[in-house]
Image (cartoon, rainbow, N blue to C red; front, side):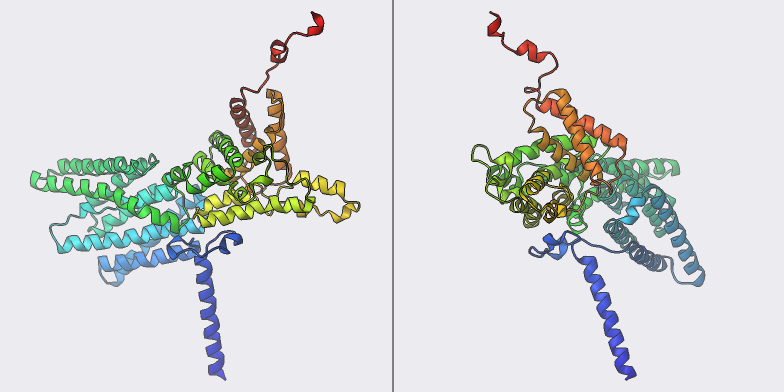
Length: 510
């Protein structure tokens, strides 16, 4: 009986572990996406708790340091102390300057992967250099780690990665100050160069910057220490090669990490913000009015993002794709109707609101079908949040004798609400463009009043309760919308006094 109880207990624990592992590796996306065809392993999102990632990194670091520095109780204690001190300093810096990073399990998993891979790569390179005198420890492509951390996470995290790994490499290389200095300055150059990378072609320029930084550092150290030319020239060549190769190595790994960890780099966003994307071409052909609407929304969103320090490129890419769900039933949306009439006229309000609500779900299904990143799928899911479909809600109230039968929640979009500045800006841009398009005489004052009304309505409805937007941000967004729309509608805007000047003379006066 005891054996049976023990066996059941072990099975239950194994089952819980397997379920937890499955939860970590399942796509962290809306359920409608999960209902589509499964993604391959290398396109899955990964969710690993921050504590687990930190524990694995610490254990791996202890093992590698123990192998490199040799056995012994004193050395083991020193290794444990070094690991604890460096880990605490990194944690303190991240918690103080990047607290949002610790809340992002995918980001923590990514950082853990970069550091673990880099530690093992350092150990292997040092071991290879010991076995073959032809290999120099200066040639390790360690700057790949700061490049990846900068592009996939942030420049601040890239910098701390460069400092952390350069210190460790100095330890691995026999406590060499020279090795640590070369890798530190090469890593700092890698972070600075990576912040300017916006397209794949920029990788070559970044590699030259890192290679030059490492070569000049070796040259400086060689002159200070009086190295002979026979020692200095090969060292410079190894530093050049290691620095240049590190950026190209990062560029080769980058697409896989982008997909696996659901990160969008500036390079990937530039590719997605291309109107030649197959899904956008389909939108332009099957729902041209929606396509034109999306282009204007993209201009509004990117300008507003610049005004409040948000990611303008991300807003532009998200705006292009936010309404792709209208491809399924384009004629039910006013911008695509033209002179064909309104198909909602014979429908009950309850049926019309179902059609409107469905374009969010259908947009997510299309995002899944075309392999759009999760970050862009969030723009599709949140661009209406839980807003009420006012027109058909009021039609339902007018058509129902028993008003209690009209449930307001039925006439709201399913959500979720925006949770970032970018998705909030997207919601406002979409609402403002659709609202302003209905103005017959868009004077500057009418434009400003309409924009303010939409911003106030969304705010009062609680759509931005989860977004760190201040009143100053909302004011800047409003002004940005106004300036952009004045440029878009400049041919139609009648400024004060223009009406009288432009009107024909009254025939009754002649």
